[in-house]
Length: 214
Image: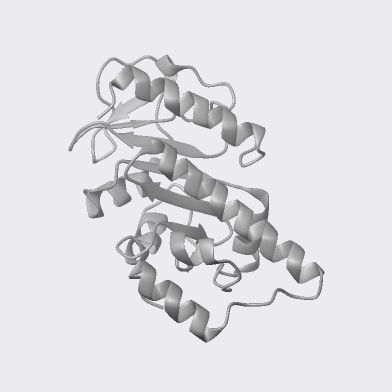
């Protein structure tokens, strides 16, 4: 595992990327990394992801309790959904939550991203389901995403945004980029009259290659 200082700097760099790509506005979004079995490094509440500093990040345990010195920065209440991922998936080392415009538009419309239009989407995700709406800051969101954690690496959060997770921080962020690219492509091809979907035979071969379930 990378050293804590390196991870703090990487979280801030990814926060800047998210802000620059308009995946978050103002203080939106959250990023977290598992430091150990019981320690999670996460972004603070009330701080723009585009302007974070390494010393502002928070260290919490799997219950969300603040660890270490109190520096006046505290984790967002939305860290609860990150913690649920870590609790249910010990193999996962990083979680990213953002509000990318196109993906969030589908989430607000109540539509999952599951039309098979690109091999890369099938290979990387299979499909991107939509979890039911949950009230922010409550256990409703962690409860809503839990059924999807074992089988998927990305989901849309109804009326909320998107969540991705992976075995390292850069991969979790890249998944978020891929989700947004897929959502924008689906939106734009729909404006052109609707995308041509992969055939049943093409999908069968892709699922055989990836080992994913249709």
